[in-house]
Length: 322
Image (cartoon, rainbow, N blue to C red; front, side, top):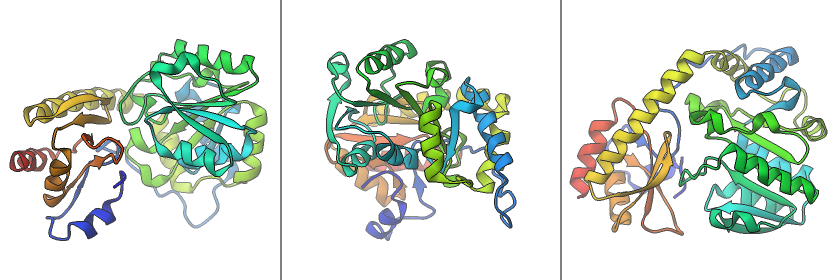
């Protein structure tokens, strides 16, 4: 079962207590205050431009480098149709959408371990940084060096920075342009994935091709209003980073106490291993708590950060499972 499949979990475990606690995704449990915007009319293109300027300021780049899209997932599935690539290397294990998007476009996709980074040879290289699900984080210097290698061979580096808001100093968004495309997500760090908002940071040629596909109204009014304000709230951002870091450490301690080994993660999610992970997954689901299992790694479970009211239920469920 993939992350975010709460309805499937409800069907599979109909006797579980409600409300369910969804820890299967890496989303901030304390969200920025959302706004619906004016849903009675089409968003003004000037408002979209203001959103892109606010995002650019937050990312440390120029407004002309940024285009808003309806979620980072949409961006990663559109790019294979905008770039010509016969071969693609995806640093793995990671989010499967990258592999799926490129294979659907007809490219030959090779999954490569982070340890083999120096030996990559493909028209397009895809890096999720920090990585999902293990949290591996390449430094900005490492990513820029990889981008230079791709430019030298007339290739592309795509860096998915969907979780970089918890480690903004490692972002390479300011360097986006020739040979380097950066994807950003709004919903994860700001706790509003339902707004479906992401950004492509790239050079003018790529952004022009992208805008020709997404049209004049690429995102909804509520996303524009909420994100424009959120990107300017640096105090909220700093407080959220501090709290998420503390909560991630608290979650590690809780999991270790109940027999898990922490393999990695970010302040938005933790990857843990357990000798009987399948039993733990089922036990948690029967308690109305959904976490993320992995078909290719049977001992792994990924836990999102619990919200204020979820800690006690998680602790009690883990005690019952053990």
